[in-house]
Each structure stands twice: as structure tokens, then as C-alpha cells.
Length: 273
Image 1 (tube, rainbow, N blue to C red):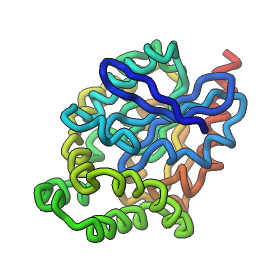
Image 2 (cartoon, rainbow, N blue to C red):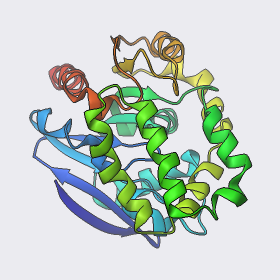
Image 3 (cartoon, rainbow, N blue to C red):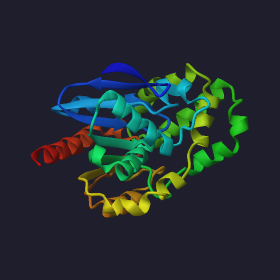
């Protein structure tokens, strides 16, 4: 995928892009980056695949300093970026925080969204998870952790979220690099301090009114975003949910074929209309 940049309202925004066809925009979560979708994108057919990077995350960590990087604000940044990039509407694919951004955008700007594929996403009051709450409470201490210690915490988080252990080290190499290249622990603390459950609760009662095609993919063994929330979300969105029995949280990395399959199915449905 080709990395691209565009200055939008004073913010240097970044994304990765490949292919041609119907626009499909991928939204990552924490503590990942557009690279989360590296194995999904090649299996998505006849699409212009765009993996947008949230402000203050991944390679855009420096852009988050001094800015509101809550998912509510990410939704605003995202719409501004769509406008600047000349993208009228698209199918949104979101994981974790990115799925929360997709839900907010769909509720606020339904005319910009043609459908959604949500993968182990935050929703309702499913977040922040306990581990993150504890780290946030100790934020001033976490900020000063030696890199070696913070890397151990990061590795544990990745390990808990993957069911295919061979993918853990690969994910570490890719996602850890963004923290290692910046202010690491401080960047992570900025990210977790931005997490506010009110952002999803504010739109939760409006989800059932969305008139959009949606598909859900969920790792049944996810300890971060429990599948019970997935079924509740599927019910409200009138959407099918594909349950991956051995999957955990980072399904796009462990089970990219299932994610790509659901994107292709939804793309086919949208293009038939």
C-alpha cells in the first residue's frame, strides 16, 4: 500500500491506499495503525482500499500532541479528511476504536456511509477495558516507565489479544515501532486518557434507526470486547454476525480471510443496489 499525506485544517493526516474501484475505508484501533489491515486489504476485490490513520496514533502520534484525540473528535477529523480527499461516501470497516468512529460517523453523517463491517468493535459501555483503566489511573507513573518495561506491558497486551501466537511477534514489530520512534509511554498515556465511554453512549440509542447494510465479525474468545456486546450490536443494527470460535481481539491479523470475505459480501450487496 502507498502511504499518502494531506494537510487538513492544520493537521498532517496520513493514510495508506491501494487498488481501484469502490472506496472502502479501514479504521484501526488502539494500539495499532493502518498496518493492522495489511493482510485484509489484498483479499478485498474490486475496491479502492484506504486505511486511514487516526490523529495521534501510529505514524501520526506527533499530530496528537495538544489535540483532542477522543473518538468523537476522530469522527470529526475523519469527515474533514473525506472532504479534503474528495471522497463523497464509502463503505467503512472498523476494528476496536475504529469501529466506534465508524458508528459515530454513520449516525452523524449517514449520507457519507454506504455500509459498515465492524470487527470486535467498541460499543455502548464496553470500554475502556479494565487493563486500560488501571493504566490510565497510573498515567503519571506509566509516562515515566523505562522503554523496556513499557515494551513488556505492550507485548502482554498483544499476546492476550491474539489467538495465533505466531502473529504476536509480527504485530509487535509493526505496531511497537511507532511508540519506540516517539515518546512511547507518554504517547500511549495520551491515547488512553482520550477514551471516553460517553462518546459511544451518546449515539447508542440511534444505532437501531440506521438504514445501512452492516456485517459484524467477532472473535468469540475476545477478553477485551466481549462477544455479548457484538450480539447486542448486531441486533440493533439488524446485521448478521460471523462468530470466529478461536478468535480473540485482533481478528484482522489472526483471521484476515474472514474479515475480507465479509467486506466482499457487503461490497457485492451495495453494488447491486
